[in-house]
Image (cartoon, each protein chain N blue to C red):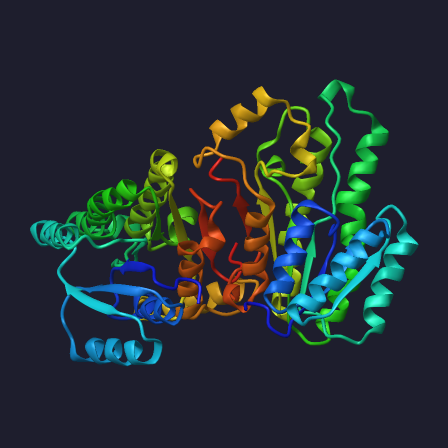
Length: 247
Length: 247
């Protein structure tokens, strides 16, 4: 139980890495503010199930990252509960493939709005709450694309490179105040985001990983769990590649 | 209890990070083959105390890692007893502080003999036990000096850079056999090795870290436990800096 009695905020909880992180954190004793974009019965009943199963509080929160006021309201709602916050995992993000000459300015701006700007704003609010207790752990989900570049993913890769730079800057500023900030750079993970990759391309990607396979969302969640915990107390400002050894 | 019923070999358990490894791995349920250069009553009483607290099995083994016949005999005995090795932590190492132009040839060779050649040869032998079983995790203790290049650490840093490169080659070759290999790069850690360094340089380095302090040996040991465990199942070929955010 690595997060006993801790409270975490996780974004992008509907599916994939965010869902796996929510489930794993709950199993390790954390109360979780489970954020996603659109309210649904499936999601709210999943949250109640988790809460019952693990004897923790799972509080669903719905806001659209494209709506600055809604993001602020989400943070205010969290703050109003008065629960001290220990962990923030910024998972929510988007990708839309386009080769360099086909990238539109609109897509580029949208990608940065969701992956970078609104994430920065939300983190500003949440870390202010953490600073009251001079402790906390922030984990930003970046991507190996943000380190290596990737054909067809210019906007996504650039936004994730920005997330990495933001991570290191935040680590430098908040470190003296007791808050650790790290990024996780997943490789090719079996989620909705990679479901559309054609068979041949996927086989080539698998072959590039030293473990000769794609990763499961829970394998990224496990690393978030570790970084969130006190067992990672001297790790900050780092980017941990969770990619089966692709680079 | 991240390593219940796993067997781990740890080198250099006499003091410092290696000693902290012995404690952290025991606390996580692992059976430990604890290597040290020479037998000591203090070490043996710590081992007895850990076993009684955690109910695990700790078997000491004493030999110089540069005594290659002794190393071979140890491995031969492991094979004969059909010991399962789930993880290997190559922690033993020595340091040398000298400016580049003042570094003697003999000392340079000794650094490489202990920190790199013995690690290379030991891991060659132990990794065969792992590839036969198609499972294992190799953790090499490198140093931030191996990536950053630090004044006074030309020889030491070079040995650690070699360890880092070796780690990636091992990960590349053995990934297909489900053996992971990663390195940990500790920054400023409160050990006897640190005490041998000029005080002002150490103070400056601590101030340069985001967390404004040196690390405890247990904080490095915790990362080794993480890498040895299933939590790191999709991490291989990586260098994890445990440095409180040292630039």
